[in-house]
Structures are given as structure tokens and as C-alpha cells.
Image: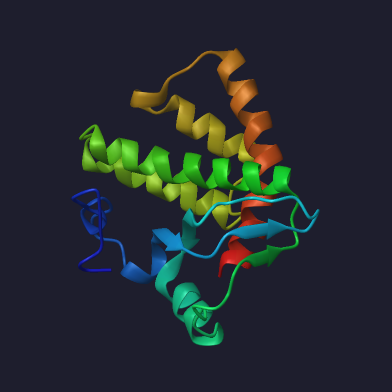
Amino acid sequence: QSGQKEKGTALEETAPCQALDVRGLILKVEHPPIVPGDGSCVFHEGSIVYSMGAEELTLACALAPPVDKDVVFLSFPLTQEEIFYAQKCHGFLTDVILDSIRQKDPKETTAKVELLVQKLWRLQITAKEFVAELLSSAPFQADGYSYEKLLKWIEFTLPFAWKYSCCVN
């Protein structure tokens, strides 16, 4: 992770004093087009995925054979709608971290955001706790309506994001 960068910003600078194996990763994965389990056509040839720790990535890379250039598509046991919501959830989780970096928030704020996403992903906090903590942070403050809307959206999309991660890994 020492040389990993996202749009020119070093991710390792965002969470001071944390061990590398505890932090999450934001991955851009290129893959053949996806065919959902419902038989519909989806032409996504890349994904932005939130993942936990290098050991998860190392294991996935070790177990997965390299994708043959003759592979025309990938088949996922998710519907087109589930893939859509999974990608949106991954996009939200990664963007909330990257936006904090891009906006040059204090490192403590970015580290807090990273930790919240990490705890949500690992089920160490509930979606309700995640949204409450996130929206009470200085750059994200919002009203009760926004809280309820975001909470329902996270509760709905997060399971799809977990399933999608298993397919991509």
C-alpha cells in the first residue's frame, strides 16, 4: 500500500498511526463485461470496490486464476438491479473517504471517516450508528430527513455491495 495513490492523493497519509493491515483499500478493478444471474446484459468493464485489508486481497489474488483474454464475460449470481445498487454503495463508501481527502479535511476527520466505513463494512457498527456518526461530523452535518433517507439507502444497498465484493474477489 505504500505506493498506492488515488487521483494523486496518497491514501496512506489519511489515517496516521494505524497499522496497514487494519485499513481498508479502494480498488479499481478491470474485468470483462458482467452478465447478471437474471440473464440481462450489463456492460460494466470496471468496478470501484471497497475492500478490507491486504490479507483479503492477497488471498483473493492467490485463489483466483488470472482472467484469460478469451473470457468474453463474467457471470454473477446477482440481478442487474442488485449489481446497480452494489456499485452505487461501493461508490458511496469510497467517495465519502476520497471526498474527505480531496476537500483537504483535517487528517483526523478523514481518519474518522475511514474508520467509520471500515467498521460498517466489518459489521462492527450498525448502519444506524454509521449514519449518525457520519452526519454528526463537521463536513457532513444534515437534518433528520437526510438521516432517515441515507439510513434506509445504506441498509438496502450494503448487502448487495458485500455480495458484489465476493463476486469481484
